[in-house]
Amino acid sequence: MTEKEIKKIVKVTVEEVHKHKLKPAKNPFQLTELYLSQYKNMEESIQIKLDTVKELRAEIPGMKSPVLVPDVIQGGKAENISQLEKREEVIEHLVKEVEQLSALKLQIEKVMDKYREDKDFRILQERFFNRKTFDEIGDLLNIDESTVRRRKNRIIKEMSEILFPICAEMPPKVRLDCTE
Image (cartoon, rainbow, N blue to C red):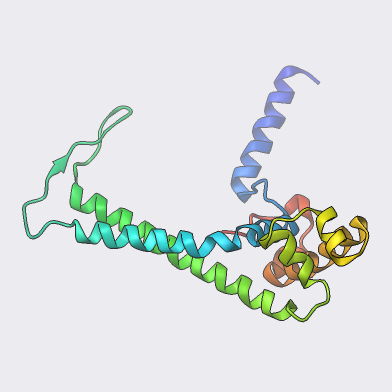
């Protein structure tokens, strides 16, 4: 193959990736583990964002004339946007993040509720909420470390199939980023 042919193939491949919006997505199993590991921090994150929104709304000035701030971007100037409009955009963005995070947290809670009675749920609690190692969990439950890993993987796999039902059916190479 010549260099010209290689460049053409690369260009076509890049266009196809952009065309289909394929992204290097983590698989549902990894995303489920990530969500469980971040679960304890979700409520705090939601509260911080809500507090920030409250502060930003409290700082909004009364009916004054808007202060225009020129935004300089590459290649020239953009539209002048008032500080008030910028603040409203930030507030909207934060509110949207809070809604998404709250929905995700609720979804995770529902899936966890389904597995609370499972004999291996304690492994998830120790691993993701108490941050214990597989060896520590094995010692605590009097089982081998490899058994702890196997049981954790089983329950995570089942949970991921509930959290990401469409992704679980797709082959990993063609999977779209299902978290968006």
